[in-house]
Image 1 (cartoon, chains in turn green, yellow):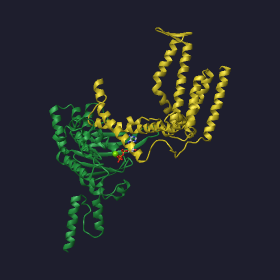
Image 2 (image 1 turned 90 degrees about the horizontal axis):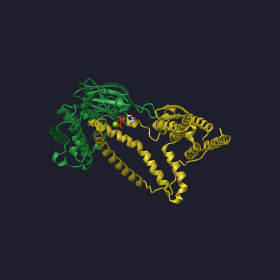
Image 3 (image 1 turned 180 degrees about the vertical axis):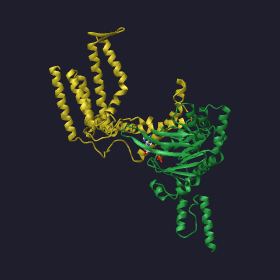
Image 4 (image 1 turned 60 degrees about the vertical axis):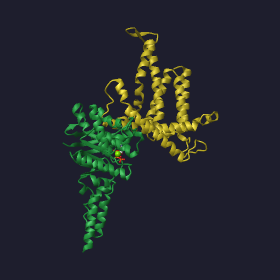
Length: 287
Length: 267
Ligand SMILES: Nc1ncnc2c1ncn2[C@@H]1O[C@H](COP(=O)(O)OP(=O)(O)OP(=O)(O)O)[C@@H](O)[C@H]1O
Ligand SMILES: [Mg+2]
């Protein structure tokens, strides 16, 4: 079953001079098992959109259904539906508060009132998953970690909830290239191995090219485009309107082709692209 | 949601009141407040109420927003009115249990409440039509003469500016942290008192940390731009008293004369 947004409109501070419509009639379906990327310019409403997915924001008008349950409803079913969606906010390291890393990661599972043994098990798994060695870091204060480690600890805190859907709002912002690469790999693994549905907000089209199987462009609170990557990356008009740039590999391949090299621009992931270029070069040489 | 609060209450606009010099506004407000307490006849109250109403209309601030600023004091007003109503000796018109309601009490309560409401409305008119920045500028300028006696006018104003500047930021931050902890399943609205207080820890700790971090960064940034207090500092937009202000002054004088006359006549 999917997450469905039906005609969602959201207004910040309604009926004041600061009123601002952040989402306008957004309809979107996030299929189970998909890896959806949401891209868009600063202020286009990405964060507002994803905060609807676990009921943190309630639409001003419209509906959000998770596995068929309306999140606006009261009662146990809606609460359970909200808990299926894990949310990693922008700069999640700002929410750390406990004395030790392990306690902080255990905060979520504790709120679910799980038994002690299970909590410890989950903390261990989550930490290992984000590459924080359990024995080394469990008793450290989260405030003594480096920025990247803090980020990973915070993400582990959400993964320990074992959500069915995981929403990440610009998880790689402000990380160094290595940390960024590492985190992306972890997320892809979550998707592949644990079969978690991922919603991934990012400015970075290269990151999106490597991970997503579906791309949504937002512009001024509206969905501008909702396509498979193979189509989305070639929608030049929409990319420009959304204030984005096509992935570097797509740009490179297009340029090479203009110069007469027989490459296929649809090979937009780094590995595919490199392989394609190598092959084309070899063929060009041999004749 | 938390971010729906409008702190500082500034309502951007371009009315006559918005264009007045903030210093003049503060000084006139001071005189009005003194006036409210000096002139206590019924005629004076009527004139002052009408005048306040006119000012409210002049400001172009929606009446709904003005009403909102009185709302938090609703209970105090009701309580004040009741105390006056049943504790003033005079002609009794009703009796509930051991309380005697008198006519004198009724009017006295009514006027005390009216006074309070006028006070609140006039002061919120100041904050509605003056941006926090202009307000602190004005305070600094008004306090400047006191510098001779060791009052750190500039530093006080700077502190106020910074505090006001960071109120919305901290509210936003709190909102974000609450959302994040809610996503991790924390629950702030159920359980006994102990449990609720405890559920604030996951919010307060990150909030304090971020406040300290911001303070630190700000201090660094100010120092990097050679800030060293108010000595020799000039302003890009210096406050200036203009035509509107003289007009306001004239209106106030006429107003004071009318009230004075009413007081002498005794209406
Ligand atoms: N708490 C808030 N109160 C009022 N307006 C808000 C609030 N949060 C966001 N907005 C406004 O809503 C619009 C959408 O904001 P949102 O945070 O969803 O953008 P975004 O696409 O996530 O941007 P970014 O890439 O910078 O994170 C923006 O114009 C913003 O000014
Ligand atoms: Mg955002």
